[in-house]
Length: 132
Image (cartoon, rainbow, N blue to C red; front, side, top):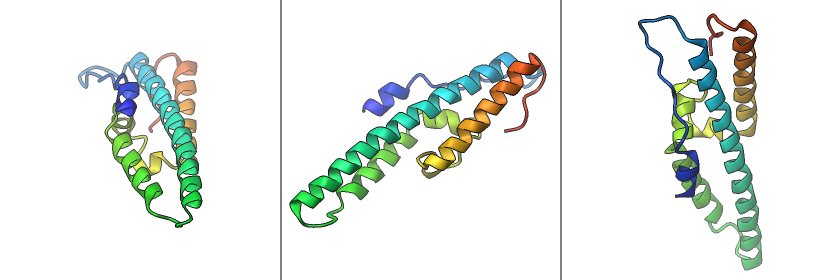
């Protein structure tokens, strides 16, 4: 599926628990998370276009809601939840469910958190990252 192919490069870089946190690894993981958020914004935009087309199709058929949109939404949720981008964001404790991620308000909050943490690491140069 296309979603999987686009997202397959999102990986969390593990840290060695026996040494102090490496800010470079934290920064790279946050940058990977930023890319994952961008990816899901693109998924949402494409999904919104398809939903509008499905609504228009249902209107053209004149039968009202025939379940196409809910089937499509469920399929997108299942596909998005199986992507490496979703796995990265859950491993980083940025999101708890696919419903949170596909909500524009929640997506904006997560993006703000990521940006704040990146700025904090960048300004400190070294040290620990604020808690997520």
